[in-house]
Length: 208
Image (cartoon, rainbow, N blue to C red; front, top):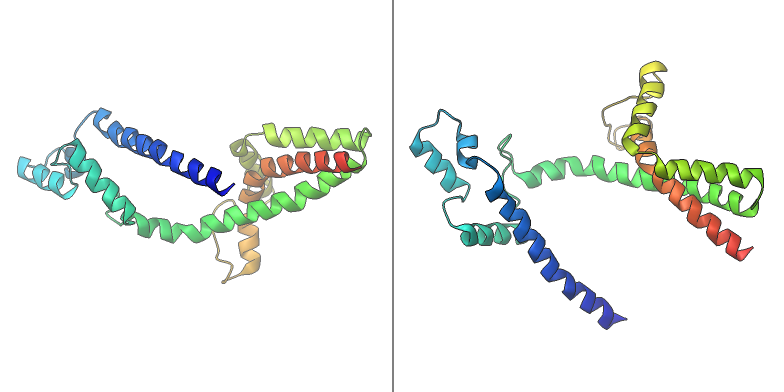
């Protein structure tokens, strides 16, 4: 088993390298000069060359790729072209909210999906089973963005029960954190809950 995992991991390395080269090569297919876009259309040729050197665009493809890959392996994701802030700093600032949402959606999917799957499995063939199966199928087929729009319109715009935007850290107010997480958590967790329900139902049916 260990040798199989090692072979699989080693097989991923060439694939990642090919994907990285292709993704990096797409830059050359984009029309226009990135240095001119950053410096501005009215920039002098000297300023454009300065920006090109700062961005590392003054070398050939191999030199640029080697520099980019080296920085990436060292955790240097570069600086954003939009606000001149290091990319890693922006990711780090948004990571708590992202991880909170992912964790909340996962817990919600388990809390909803497992009971539904157990009930449907124990009531196999009944109207309860058919009804829950329909809901599970709808949850898988329903796009998350569409469900999110419906939730916002009903709970935030019409009823004013939950906030539509914003984020409050758990350390500041657990209740406000929960209120801000509920709508997006439901939107991203619905499909996972439906899949968990289907898998749980299949397991219960096979055991019973």
